[in-house]
Length: 167
Length: 118
Image 1 (cartoon, rainbow over the protein chains, first blue to last red):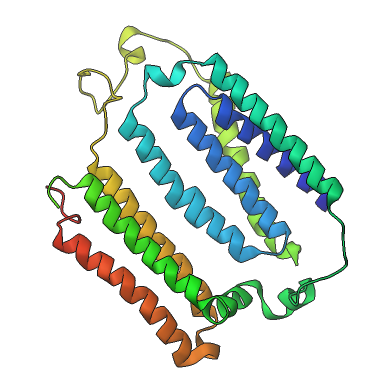
Image 2 (tube, each protein chain N blue to C red):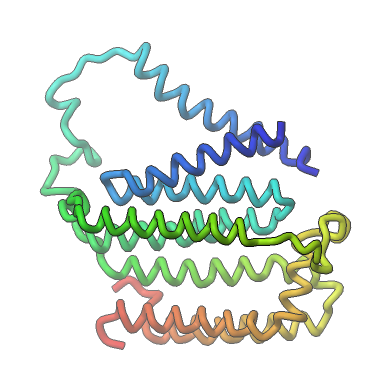
């Protein structure tokens, strides 16, 4: 049952991912991307990572999609977006095949050593996914967490410098 | 554990079924009497002036970035709120610095007039 559900969601994810590339209008592509994000959120839930699922919808399907849509509207591609460039299609196809081969290579090379980290599924079920993330984020990964705030500050300053007439 | 998500699945199923059903049934059993006025592009009852696909002002970009930054700040607050009691003042201090840096950004935006729509 769960496997069947996984394949159903995976099918929707692949189809909507294909539509992102295939849609004529960039806005339609962006909406298809939202669908892909939702499917990924379902996968996170199935992997017992509810916090990741919530963030996937909140930040990716919410905030980042808003930015992507605004950028599409700012650029206002119009007729430009409907053009198809043969050499870019060929280049993209080539890059796709190379990436696919690499993925297969690494999957074949990869060897399950049996080594596992300290966080197990039982531990996550016992303590809770969000608690574990919160504790690790504020203790072991405190510095990257604080650097993230500086990254966000840079984003604010950069946006003002770009968008404001006189800074 | 996944059983607890069953209500969400039911909700999504009903929402999708309702959305698809509305479109399909109005297509199937709805009346179609097209006229020139009905088929015309419609915007608030006004006759159209040019294309709707104008270039959007860059001011919207500033709004979007502000929204993203503070949305991510809130996303970081959730795991902290869950372990708030365990970590106590240490966690509050760590999160305090995080928020302090972003408040600097907020004050900067405010001073530069990025929150105004002039």
